Length: 92
Ligand SMILES: [Zn+2]
Image 1: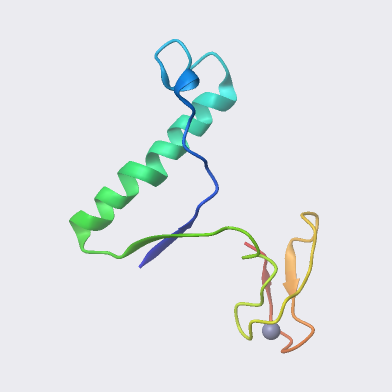
Image 2: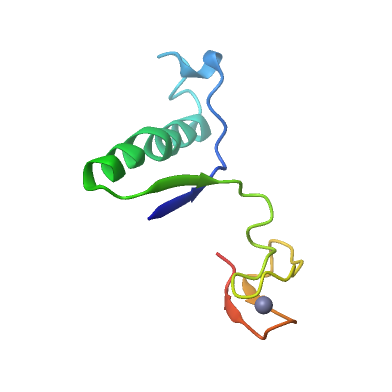
């Protein structure tokens, strides 16, 4: 099974055109990553008979993967420490 966080919104039409992509590095990066997540990866998963799913990214780093308790942390906190079950792991 492969799950990806649904972080990248579809590109608006004005940057999807040939002239648009490449003008800005960020758009190029977004386009490449977006294509990978939305097209290439689902296709490879289908080919390999692997389940592919997108999950809502909101709150995934705030919820303990072991017990489900909410552990609030800002982006600078890279390690997850659960106050409820003691689980410790990298936030990502
Ligand atoms: Zn926990």
